[in-house]
Length: 326
Image: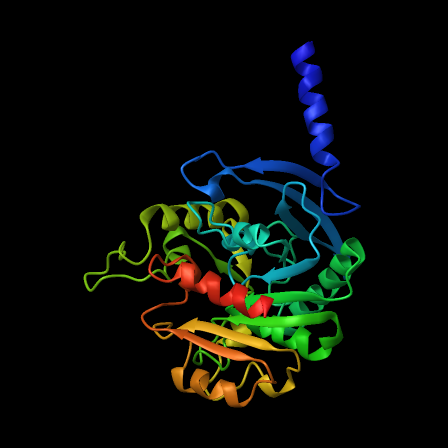
């Protein structure tokens, strides 16, 4: 009986230590590898529900234990897999935990139909413009919960399309914008006829770099990172994901998906020159189109998975944090 009471007390304390009010779930997370400082850090994780268009959207937040962050950042996922991608919890690869240790409240949103958000009947419905409105609803929730008037935002892959459209409409709610591996133009014409993408392990791992014989290049991405990433794709995203964003992106390479001239907040473009979805000439020209105090950073040899690639992820984190803090 005494052990049971202690467990109940611990759960109650965890519920009371979230990022704000209306918390669905709060818990303390602690890494156990004491060889590294980052592995000893404790985190507080909280879940929120955002309602839009009759659907419940999953929004979560992570901070270091006991912190009262004065800055918030919202991370927006790509077209197939949801926001778990930002928290590959192996060594110090997790972008979520790194930003939390830097003093941020780190928020993640699953767009309607993705991950832990409510599923949709029509997979074409959550397209780029629809997702931008989901981001707007999540941002309003963050502003309300945090008491801060502005946040930073980072989009990855298709998330750069949705984030940039939100940022163009609501610059007053943002400090800085980060476009990681931006899909500036269509990735090539391909007719997407099915409303849902059929996910599998091979597809989840497809963006990791490979050697000439088709095997994973473990000098670029560690095996454990690939395994964790793919396992989370299966756990959170299951067998299918909405295809509205994919249909938007699978158009002619001449069709612009992100209009950089509409962005007014300082913007960081960060990517690798070995990314098959990007056109390096368009990236090189981006600095001429961005607002003041913006920056373009290209990593030679890095791919779409830059943030979890062994030779690059530390510099990726440093460039990101330096830009956000300056």
